[in-house]
Length: 330
Image (tube, rainbow, N blue to C red; front, side):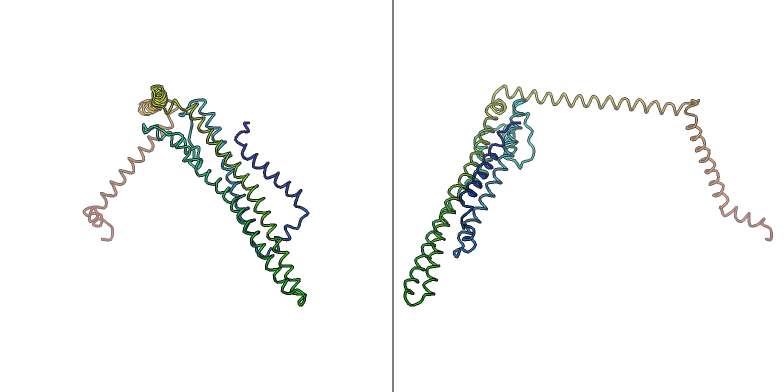
């Protein structure tokens, strides 16, 4: 099986695994999670939340690009066999399907297809998602710098309080030193998280996904240029190919119609034979029970008809009076 459609997903997983291994190696013994739990500015939580959103968006984009690449590989095999007409467009949820549907619609309407423009339109949504992930990475760097400023501000505030309490308030002095140390931790960790999560990890994830989008763009463009160019170029060869496809489709319909007429002729012939056998005066021994049943039914209908006539005659007013006249006791 061709591994090229899975290249973006493989690169994404390799980079995610490498980042996880590096973190476990360098930062597993540090108190970074303890600091995050007691961070007074809470800006580190904002950095982690935005990183999770960017990571999720990057992974979803990677899956979408992988599915599109698999679809493009199927189109490549179909186009090698029969050109643009052999490509069967399915659901319009995929950008590759929408692209080839738009290309076929343009050709059917006798227009001149702009392949590069159509590809750019269909790939634009994936490029926007990739750039959004990259933007989140830049935003994390900015938040890290803001956290640095906030941490330094907390440090200066704590030192100022410690200097004011020096020599006369031991408790206020210790509180100021704790505030100063907490501010230094905020400045250090926010800079570290913003630079590592945004400037390194998310930017690399964004580059991997954008590279996958560009690779998909190139694959679809190659299919059109190598295997489908004769189908959308205004040439006599394209008209001849389209005419051959129409003729082949018409021949299939004619063969189906001939088969249907032949089946109908057989059925009508069998029906005519059955009618002819029923109308014979001397039925065969095999068909005798059927004829007997028909004769019995006909005799029953005749007797029922005679009985109805007799009842109707007896119910006439003249016959009723005549019957009452000769009835005993009258």
